[in-house]
Image 1 (cartoon, rainbow, N blue to C red):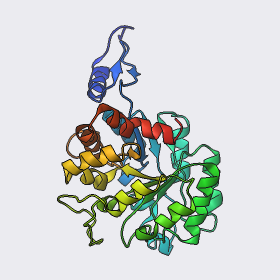
Image 2 (cartoon, rainbow, N blue to C red):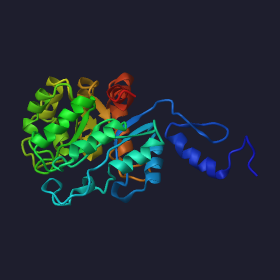
Image 3 (tube, one colour):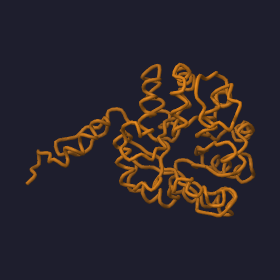
Image 4 (cartoon, rainbow, N blue to C red):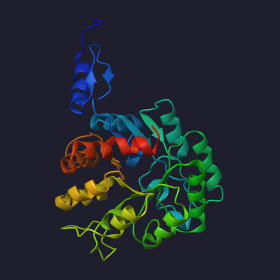
Length: 317
């Protein structure tokens, strides 16, 4: 039998993985908080078929102490969802109720956002319902709409009323069209903090990024791209370093990345957006992004801002 002060083989194996992630165990095998907490602002339930239990294990293996689950909108056969192709954020992500139900009994380790298809007639009441239940942001907004459409502006107005950020997936000719016009929305809604994410957002750190059809550019970066300018010129434009595009934006030119992380150290937040199961190794872009941030931050203070402090401040955690 197992006595009070022993750890059996099952606990040992589980604990070994958590120790690798920076967690510690007491004598009973109970998980204690890691010495350096990390907030992941971008994760999904049911991501590409991954179960919630496997998602939770993945997050803990990466050393994540707080995760914000971002829902998709309801499944609809609308142009804004590419007639169903983009339902579930195109990755089978769970919706509002799934994220809320999973997170509500697991806070503060698990938190949730609120989302809906913008041109669905009940979009605003649906999002507002979950904001009232404690959603930390609106997002992930990943729909085939103009970023300055009346429907999107209603969502921005709602975010302003509830004082929550908005996280947007920018992908040329696919999601949130009109990135080159978005500065007008930043000016119209100055009290709303916008988090930019995905291919078009991160490709445009480069001043010389001319062909917007190239979603994952490689090679050296010239400072002064549209993303760089928006983050420099507008206090309410922030960056969500997540997904393959966020990681690539750092690894394609490490010299530029060091300067970029330093320049925007108060406006960058870590997210994983990772559908991996293991939570470590080369297939886990979430873990790879953490490693890149640690490697390319010019100081420990900058690293901690991006991995923890900026999110703690933005989401009032």
